[in-house]
Image (cartoon, rainbow, N blue to C red; front, side, top):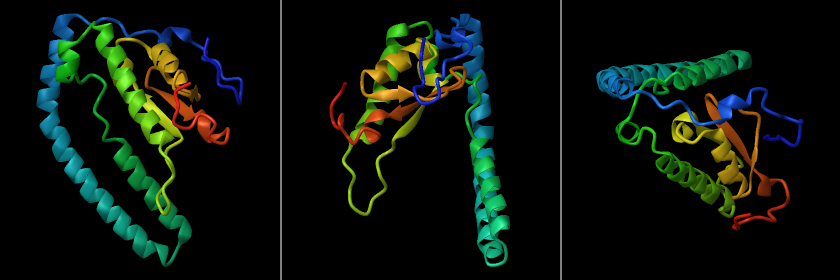
Length: 189
């Protein structure tokens, strides 16, 4: 079904590449209300975690003078703390509440996200600036109503290649023009 050219990647379970189940209205409303209650807690938790990350990074600067491996461990700890700040999957945002079951909304959402990544990846490299991104990740929340297969279709039409992905969480993509010397640069394929 979908291939990752470098390693012969083929998803083991293709049922996860289709759209998520249509949730009952009560479940969507309950998720939205739960999110409203959870968001203030999440904001407070984010402030605490960011303060902790600043402390950990400050300690890593001090430890850097003594131990290189200690600095790596502290940096990994800071990265792990920041990774846990994602909004839980059960949360339902206002647009998701309004558009549950609307495949056209999710197709437009995927097209918009892939278009933004394409614009960033196809931008010319500026001197003394970081190179444009060559890899991206589209989260499940963006394609829940149409499935990961639509992300792959929309992205390959714009010059992206599929990377090993778990469509229950996200679809990872690689900008193919980055490997072929920029032959597709600035154009949709």
